[in-house]
Image (cartoon, rainbow, N blue to C red; front, side, top):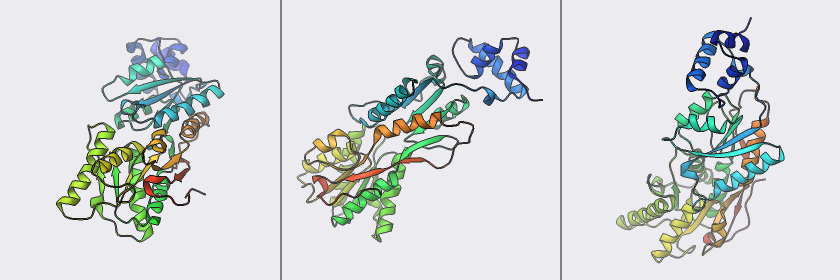
Length: 339
């Protein structure tokens, strides 16, 4: 006969409600009581999956490095979609920004979420803690074993950008990428390399450059472009004739560097970004980019949280389709998009 919540309450000398709150990591208990109940439940072999939580409160967790919406507004649009989906389903959303130095356990107790949506990059330690909470959890623009996830079709987006640049006659295409610890950036880098292979073109690995950590994203991308120019001149080799950057903010910063060096865009160097933030269409020249329904990412995250949680997470992502928007920064050709 399996252990029941009543057995745990009796062994820990607490009420059934206290056991429920402790195992759901809800507020209203001392840490000593919570730890004692969890220890008793584990010793008795109680399956906390028997606690069926009706999802009402959902926390949108965002790493502190992503919460500068003025510089990189991508996640503000994802959050809008998330909040809209919550309102439609009468869920109560909250937003929590966290980093490796914050006490995430304490913050989660204050928010007391029934479910959690994690957006963008977070450290593996934070993911491990979230997994231990045994709450319905979905990853947005991120992927990790044991979690449901929704992502942009990053590889396809990179392929569309590269197809466009190849169609313009560009062959020395540089890729400015950030840390490959970010799932979306690693996938865009993969799509960049794969596009060369698919096109039967020679790939120069020196044209793939990673931005320096610790710098603001725009300064890091500008520094990467300066290094590409300096290396070409030092080795008396041709400059890249195009740059595909991992996001629009990086592409715009790199493009400003080229213009400051007297290079013509797109005549000397063509530029393509990713995400289609508002600044992309407003730049001079306007930036070609891969566009995605960012609000759909947030909405789909809520839908995944409400799906049957008794089924194990699939290792396949839920993918949001992408399209390519050609603008003056790369020359203009017909739109290439997903079917």
